[in-house]
Amino acid sequence: MDSLDKSSADFLFNDMDANVILRSKDNVDFRVHGLLLSMSSRYFRDILRLDPPNNTQSFQHETRDGADIIAVDDSNNTLRKLLAYCYPHSVVNEPIFDQAEDLYDVLRAAEKYGMDGVEKKLRMALREPRFMEKMPLRSFALAVHHRLPEEATLAAKETLGLPLVEREYVEELELITGGTMHRLQAYHTQCSKIAHSVASDLSWVDRDDYTWFTCAECGGLRSSSSYVTISGNRRMLVVSRWMADYLAKADVAVTERPIGRTVSCPELMRATLEKASQCRGCGPKACSELRQFCRKFAAAVDLATSEVELKLRFC
Ligand SMILES: [Zn+2]
Image (tube, rainbow, N blue to C red; front, side):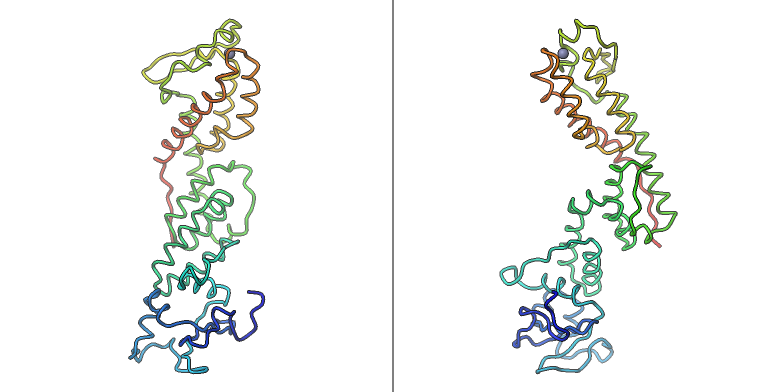
């Protein structure tokens, strides 16, 4: 895009056979095929009809090299990305978005022009982990700002992976109100309480033959007296010290960051398995059994917190 001059778009959108020119607000002309535009957009289909209604103010009867010019209020960057979705994949690749904000600009344009198919694709892109997981607070603020409740809810869930007290400022927070931030914090606090209860009540554990319950080596050492209650109201002794330590640390971690993946975060797993490997009895089984346990643990946390309602208000 950097190579664009002030009046014409790049090669793809400079086709002299194209019959319509979309002129961006920064005065870049995109020559496009009206048929493709009409197929993608209800808005352009209406104004490109042979007998446009007299009241279509946006349609200026100005032409350039025989093409009708339609002035739009989108930047050339937004328009270029939007139009890429209207052309066949064999001709142009779907745009790559480095910034979520760019994606929202294009989404706003797609909504404005009644491009339902494009809107659907953009909303799927917004849900990609590189936005939701990597920058949840930003994604949340942007989704609320752009009034997208589903995306806001997904992003809010991802913010649970950030400790409440250590959240860093991101400038997108300026887009939301103090009330919205308060509701997000209340959601986190509620999820923390529930995650803590899942970590302390192990009724979701359906196996009693895990190595940390049965290991003769660990049992012989009598190194732990940590009892837990698992499914079926069975009271079990966690004979392995390493597992008792894991359960205590996982409880603290998941209370602070109440999202399932916290229970198998790399640091916690590494430290736990290192300790487990020191027992001849547990060592060979610890890795696979702990991973299986963590999958169930994570699912139990996510299931429980999914019941917590995030109250959102869009004004
Ligand atoms: Zn052991």
